[in-house]
Image (cartoon, rainbow, N blue to C red; front, side):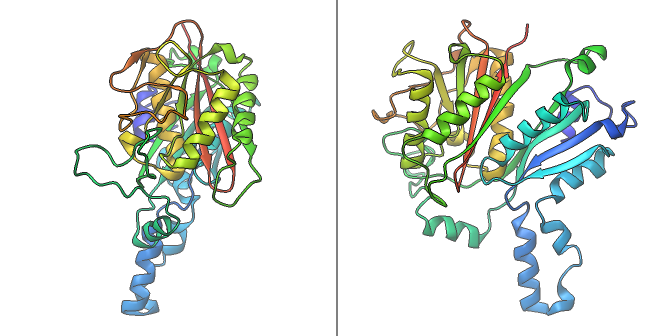
Length: 343
């Protein structure tokens, strides 16, 4: 949050030092569990030392809302501090909620994204029991997280955070802010299919994609790039690919469709923070005009049938202006962010 705040040209310390009304600034953060290690540590201290060994901060530091709270405390943001919990779609949905809060005039500036710290033994064991984690090793020097690849075998759990500073256009231009792109719109849907597995038809994902484009006031022909959710699970990647083909059309080679990339080969799966970090990458893709390649996808699964960027970066096509960033979560949560290039 501090990095994003400083990059936006605001002063170290927060709203008052930046000459902002703290009541016109908000925080919108996505998280599934927050810092799971705090809860695990509290349980361990209870067993080892008894009730008096448990810190009184265990409960307040465990709730998912604490991440948004810590940002508001650190930067003295009093407008609002919301938390969105929608599984792995949390970060993207939190950004979408912030877009609406600015649109509707509730705040002028919002820090939005996701944060997660869930790499603990019990959670890792749970994902392993679901057979969701990759069982590939590092022996061949390649990442075991291989989105869209023929040999993909599941995701690699990760931790981190990624935030954007969103700002009303007139507010940003009045202060001469550097503008990376326009947060143009977003879309939500629910699969209503299964508590963990994606709907293989991809119909829910397709609905969220269409809603994001429509909310941005655009058309599918305006889409020049997709930052895919693509966790490297067999079923999830196929469902997302099918939805992208249904909405954007077929395409399986360079020049044959909208270029798609997936970053979980680089980063692993950051759970509720994935949408925040991947939104940062999508913003920079628009700003720099360069599409990053998908690490780990040495041989594309033929059933994916998308123009997946691999090997080397590729220049962003110039014949449209929308980039989509996808996030989908257990339980059928689908969220898509639409970003527009600005001159």
